[in-house]
Image 1: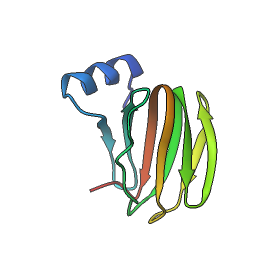
Image 2: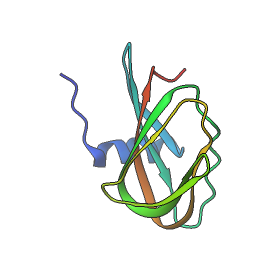
Image 3: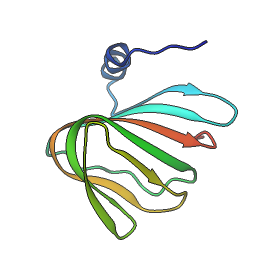
Image 4: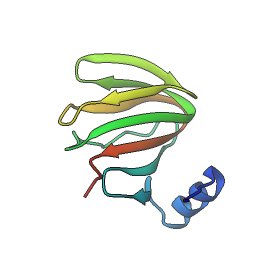
Length: 105
């Protein structure tokens, strides 16, 4: 069994001075924690994998392809492989659990 605690993942992400921390990689899936602070620009580009974004905390808008929605704690957004997606209008520090299938590089 592999078990993770969000507070420890956030501390590890901060210690590595990055917006993204991949904490699990298996044969069919990888999972990471993505952090964007209020007002920050999201630099992500279309992914080669299908992606599920689970918003752990914060508030923002998210555009996937041509559709835009508001996301907040508890929101889950699926992004098909190759589809442009980004967070914007981030009004509260955003923490997102990101699941890639197949696993990212």
